Image 1 (cartoon, rainbow, N blue to C red):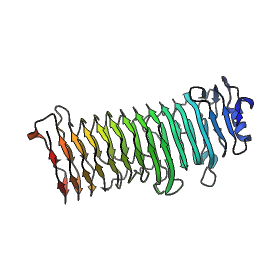
Image 2 (cartoon, rainbow, N blue to C red):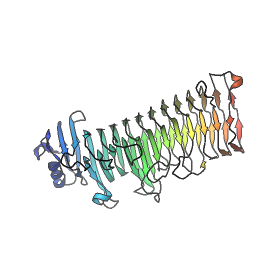
Image 3 (cartoon, rainbow, N blue to C red):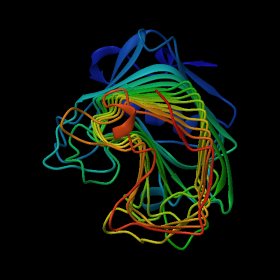
Image 4 (tube, one colour):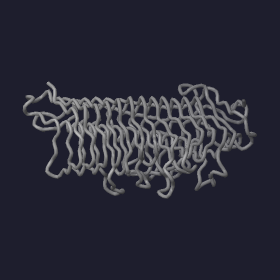
Length: 421
């Protein structure tokens, strides 16, 4: 372990420590760990190009702080560390391998730019193998806070990302707390994101995004025990296959708590993912919003409540592929007190399974709502064991299943559909 203060870094918060950090990274043999003791390190006017086998650790986010700024290069984004395909030739043959970034804070509040720049991240690594990113506090970056792509055999743990993407208008690339590009390693990327907290970020709390429309959406990615609050979207799947979302809370996000759509740069939605054991609550828009996908998504054992739109909504967003979604499963969810319908289908479904959901109290005074509203073509649906309850109207006025004039329901299977008081 190398003490950075013994190798040219000052840590007084004023002296530019970036040249000394770059020199130290360049001179370290693989396997070395750079330790930055508790201090404030000023990183000015340039990001640090990282090398394989070199790690960076601090004494904790409240102790070791890296403050990014660009007073001498006001149009230049300054990530703390980066290694990218366009700037450095990163690839599966030239990855960053065996690195750890842990125990420090990245403050991007002093970066000024004339316009949004996707490279103005806290960390911006591509093609990382056996990387560990943990116990980081990243905040106020102009673009994505943790913006690392193609992470193979990697873990991202206990990252707190707050007010990242502050220059993002809402329609730029990135701008998230944690944004992870996928697909660069082929059909399998082994990545776990766990126990992270994302708040007030420009676009997403957390997203995974396929980076080339011609690539195979990868399997092997998990998001576990994370919290996403007050972002535009809470957690988004923009191109993974079999993404697992478990034990997460998605609260107060403006457009949707959980989102599957073609909103990413390649307009490819995720498919065959699983959302289980989550709380999707108090989002001003829809709770769970799924569309632009060939299907296969499962939402189970999840509380979807008090959202300003619909509880669950199936719909295709414009600008991306719109195909019927097959094999959508909603099983054992508790869907209540949403301002719109409990379950709303505005996009074509094939062979959906709506099983054992408890749907109650949706709609607001003066805004009629259904437990299940089918507003598009739905074929070979299995709808059974639903418990649908509208506490605001007498039972005689409660529609257990409402099919609008535009809906077409073919070959349905209904079993034990029961409004309850």
